[in-house]
Length: 142
Image (cartoon, rainbow, N blue to C red; front, side, top):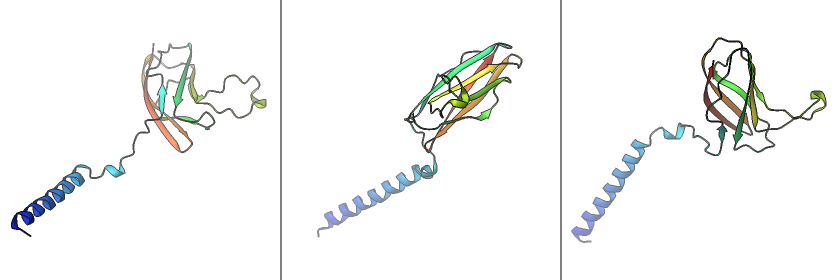
């Protein structure tokens, strides 16, 4: 082999090794970071304001779960105003004890707000079919 070929080969090998080292340095620890499942969404983007001592109803929608998936809607963090509850939307069933288990991709935030006017920040969590999704909201009570 000529000296030129040996030098070029060494330069190429060194460049590859340096490139791999830089890649590993830049991407260190990223394997442990959970990735957002971009197939799941929740709407609306913002909540309608509520009024103290008045009934409030906000339907929440999610996509990315099968309609047959049993979803658990819960509060992951923060506080919702007193008098409101978060639950799976089972509207359409007149006699509750005769209704089959309803599977839905809708949630309800409903009730009569009894807290004083303020701004409430909270995160809603949806679990189902081995997937979890969270979305943060702000609810203004007037």
